[in-house]
Amino acid sequence: MGTEMKSNSPHRQTRWFEPSSIGGMSPLGKIISYFLLLFWSIVVLFPIYWLCITAFKSMDDVNFGPVYIPWVDFTPSLHAWKNIIVDDMADVASAYFNSIFISFFSTIFCVMVGSLAAYALVRIQYRPKFGSIMLFALTLAAACVAIGAVVSDPPVYEISR
Image (tube, rainbow, N blue to C red; front, top):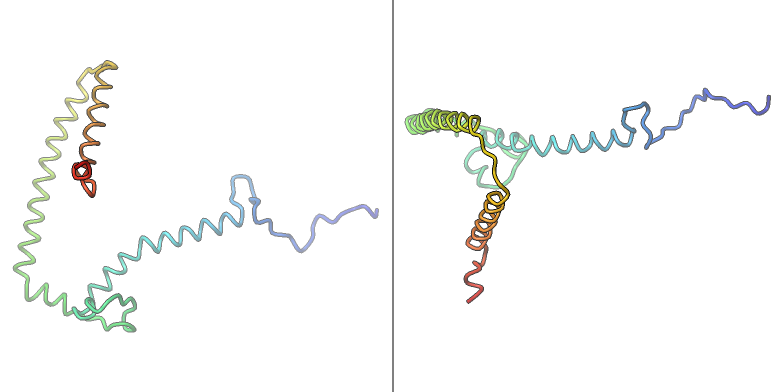
C-alpha cells in the first residue's frame, strides 16, 4: 500500500515543450507563434495607421517630422481635405478621370491579348528537343549577364579599362 502514487495531484506541472494533445501545439510554441503573429500584424497595419493619421495633419506637422499620436503630438484638422475637395476639385477630378480612363482601357487591352495568347497556348502541340531547351537557357543566361553588366555600379565596362 505504501507504493501507490497519486495520479490526480492538484498541482499539475506545465510542460512547455510538450503539446497537450495530438496535433496540438506546445504552450511555448503557442506563445511564440502568437507573438510572431502580433508582431507581423503591427508591421502590416502600421502603414495604414500612418496613412490615416497623416491625412489629418497640417502641412507643418507633416514637414516637422514623425509624430504618431493624435491630440498628443499634433492636433488633427481637415484643412488638407478642404484644400483637395473645395479649392482644387477641378484638378483632382481631372486626375481621377485620367487614371480611371487609362486603367479601364489598359485592362480591356490586357484581357483581349491575354485571351488570344491563352487560346494559342492551349491549342499548340509543342514537344521541344533537348538542344532547343539548352539554347534557350544559354540565351537567357547571356541576357542576365548582359543586364548585370549594364546595371552594376560601377559598370563592368569601366572596370576593365
